[in-house]
Image (tube, rainbow, N blue to C red):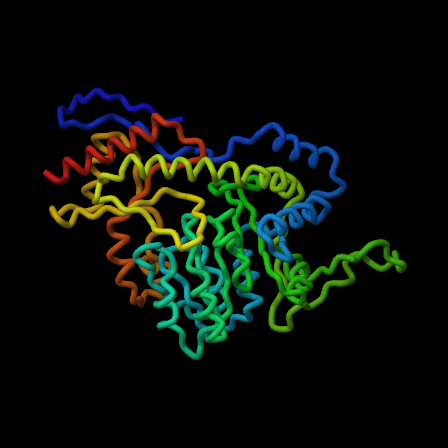
Length: 410
């Protein structure tokens, strides 16, 4: 529910005390069925990890996205790390990543020694620009990471065509794009690998953290469990030589890689299977909210929204817009100051271009050529957003934004 502002103004400057609409503290109020699924595991499961609930969740998820294989992991960052491992990234290999994304997209590749090459965004979709991706391919390019940021599908048909012509692996970052599709095909299944997130802020969650790695390659699927679980290869069924120590089968699954520990717990998996049932319905609510706001703001030419590729389904993970006040010399920061202080809407700025972060600058990745992103980002902002936002909150946000823009026009 929105927080109501105190509308008194002791300063006399036309400002409100507090906020009328803020970002919620909890995105996922659990249903009784979801709570019971977790409790049942706590009370009755034979083990708390690597069990039947993981197997079922992986089966359910693979069916949902249309992938041949799905593997539960402890977060999307490590799903991306698995993808980087199976791309055989070595120091000096180049990986092309859109500069407009969450930092976790790039960190696993940098951690393996890759040279990160920042790609620009398309001015209409705000996702990876296929033309810029192709321009930045060199003989050292090993992989590209299209990010379906905000639930906006990338132009995967063009990206895949370019990648295949140049022999570049494709790792889809679908952290914010569960149920996002192009012509009915789920994102994450176009490229070589798809990586999904179940963080608390996502469409569904597995107790705050979690992720999924999907692929269609039989050999890679054979090796994932060992890489995911410290080099352990689970025995299938009853072992004839039952006296052999249970952990005698630790092995090397890729000759140039140490195994990791990316396991997802049984309670998380039980919750995941339950939450997966509501994803489509919840996304329909978000899409309906998006349409309502776009209709409210259709007569404000300074405000623009992302375009969606032909045949694409946008799942509206976050509500980011672009403001253009250049005709009268105003910026995004001017807008947010008025919107926040006078109309009580806690609008914020999300996702710095990664080359602006000290982390990437200190690691040697501060160089960039992304003119579209630079110009676009400096005037982007985000509304508070959650599934089931009430009509009153949407009214306050939209009417406040309209009033703030009118005020800035002078």
